[in-house]
Length: 155
Image (cartoon, rainbow, N blue to C red; front, top):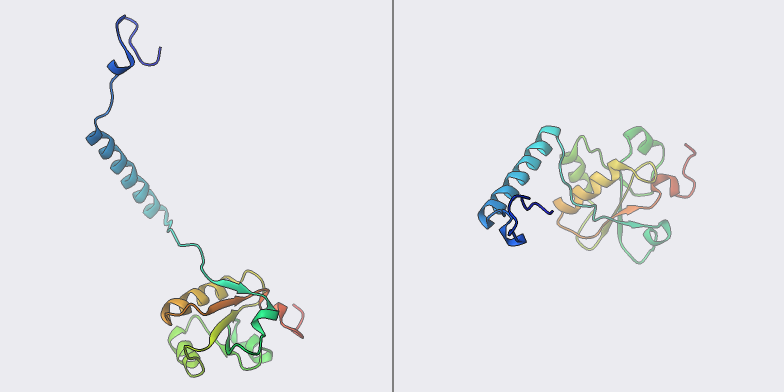
């Protein structure tokens, strides 16, 4: 009988106990605090969804758009092969890598970041950081990464 005591024959739904607005707010705040504490204890961090657009190779290679290519693969792979004119970016040395990038980048150029292949977490992290550090919206990921580049060595 929807929470109405059987020994109370004249009860109506309005007679059932309800939380006051103050108690409702307090309960919601308590739930939020518990959720936050649990997330901190477990090391869960909320991150915004990535805002880095992915460019197909044909779009990234358009000659009428000045582009700086940023290669986030390890130095050995970069030395063997890379997009002509690309800047090597070592995320373990972000300050010196950023200085190298700033030697060739200006606000009129877009930045296309690539890693080994599709879904490179390193490329994603570097692209997000560059977008923030350089305060530009012109940072993109190369769809397929280095593996999509013509004549890229087989992996």
